[in-house]
Image (tube, rainbow, N blue to C red; front, side, top):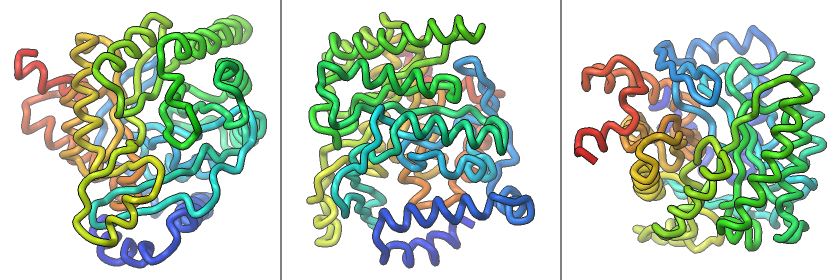
Length: 377
């Protein structure tokens, strides 16, 4: 199915506006999975048969491959992502206040380099409406059968010195619906957001969310919700070490590496150059090595004892294997689904299963950080 998508569907989609294609695809997935008659063939075609179970953050994942934030900002196709076999789903980013995002056009793609550039600007319904959406979904369909992650961002209208209130408010409104929360301080498309990656600002945001976390866990007689932080790939080694130390000292449960990049690869054609000249964050294949390098650095900094979520440029099982052996416990894709289609999940999971056998491993957990272990790091 992946070959059919690449040969026929992708060239047709490439002729259309990127954001409109994105929205149509979400709508089609939602409609196709709205009833069991059309849902069954999708499950048969795309859901992986292999199990690569891993326990993390108090949940069992059937395999380590999930959906990255940004693909389904408004949680419109939760049943669809379950149907095509994702191991977990991350929705958002969600801010305290509803916002339209940046002016259109704001999403661009280069098929030749398998890269996307977006400057969406956290367009989302706001945390109050998102809470209502998730409550309605749970009442109609029940809780998702895979872990649901929620990505939290800062409203553009909120001053930087009030960022902690923005994040904490959204966290409180959405706490009961999410299984894992990701504090996003690394999007390049909200002015000055990346300044929040300094130790003092980041600690204030995390601490504010942890206060809410403890209060609601006690109120609901529940365990604390895992909180992760998502970082940018432009950090220096010193900045990276500071963020890791700050997040760990604030009892963050892990880190997501990485968000999109503001750097650009060398273009090989005029059409590529036109895309690369656009402002915004770049994701896709050109980000793969940079995000993997960050995973390796974080794994070494933490002696492999702190969960890392690898995202950036995963297009096949080889890319996924590189990130896992570099130190990622779980992995995510966004651009990969744009360029490889819905069959990516099955391809990645089946490919990882083969690599486990080739390396004489019995479970996916044994592969985490394998490259460090073999190199004696």
